[in-house]
Length: 116
Image 1 (cartoon, helix red, strand yellow):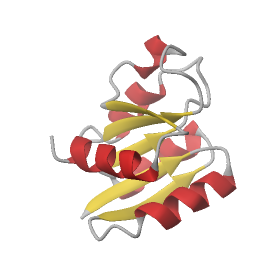
Image 2 (cartoon, helix red, strand yellow; image 1 turned 180 degrees about the vertical axis):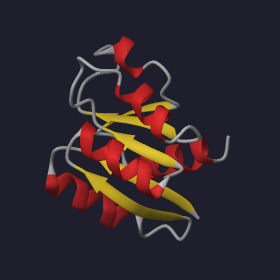
Image 3 (cartoon, helix red, strand yellow; image 1 turned 90 degrees about the vertical axis):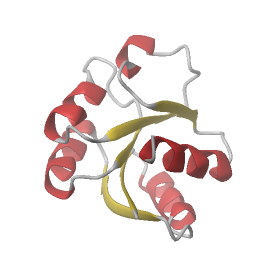
Image 4 (cartoon, helix red, strand yellow; image 1 turned 90 degrees about the horizontal axis):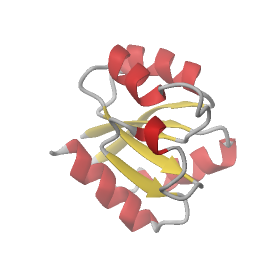
């Protein structure tokens, strides 16, 4: 079972992703957070395998901070911005998925990064 934490400021988007990903028998959403500070707190408690991370605050190294509290975590940046946006802030992320990608692409990315 792949344990996933989803960090996004949109409650509705988190609910949508939860509903879609939990249809997969191999994925369990173990936590949600509306911001990076919440994600850091939850990641330290639940030790997810994968964090889906919206680029909420480009003035901080959220990927590095998450890996600091949960060293084995793989971070997938899930953003509404094009790949070119915030390139430096995504350093260390295992993958990048734009929010307009299909749920099948997101699911495949979660499965891939969790098993590599």
